[in-house]
Image (cartoon, rainbow, N blue to C red; front, side, top):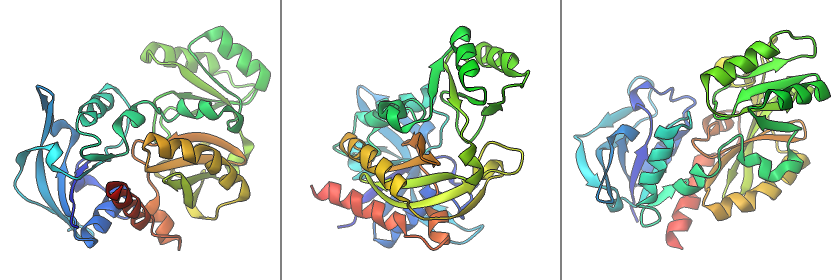
Length: 314
């Protein structure tokens, strides 16, 4: 049966189709004969509890420079759609949280992937502490004394914002680095949120692995190797992607996390693993499925749509 699929995402004209997961999901949905509709989060509206958006019919093509066509916008009750893919990128701020509250009004009558309440309740750098035995030593606080003590204990640490994304605001502070105090002051003065301090993992030089989970099962991975002189492995800040398999440790981590995510309504997640340690659980707008396929891995868009259709059938 053809489905009516809404894709809530960032401006489609600005994406890089070679590495855009939302685009890959749109291509697979269209291949299956589903009817696509596009809108940006700012087109959401809620009146008297009814959520609508100005949606536009969407057609996609895997052609650089000609990858989409949009029809005329029409105000539509989102309950008239079968599926909504919530795919706008972070930052995970109040704008993002407001969107989850709106979409929660239509889910599960319209299946929202991922479940908006679960997305709201699983901040990507805080939620992993639920699985504390899998993380490197981690402190979340604004208290300067606690940060000083953590640094004294481990010497070589990472500082990062609790709701940052894409490698922004991540700093490695060595035992002799004189910037620690200034960085803590900067975080405290520019943001009301806590700071994350984490023991530095030297294994990151071999890569920060993104493992994709579909319905709680690990299905593929991509390694991202930091550039020389940089502790960040994110591809768009200079990290180099490379093919990666799933190790026994990766599968152990996924086995512990996966059932929890599945039961929360997280159909599609990306977890980050450095060495033997989990560092993040990405549920807002996970990426890397096009890169995994390009390196000879599975077509994860197919798996995601199989999972969505199975949920609808249930």
